[in-house]
Length: 64
Image (cartoon, rainbow, N blue to C red; front, side):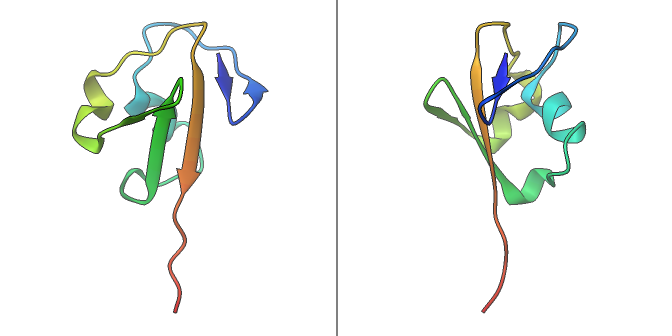
């Protein structure tokens, strides 16, 4: 699986929620795309990742 363009080895089953928890991102401040499709936040815990997936994690930064 690729995450933000870098190869990541993982042990299935892994959900989007698991991936976020293993990263530096906060679930409430990240958008997730799998193979170019946005994953709704409500589906993070039920969306399982596959070896061939390409995942993009986009963190939001506050400011003003």
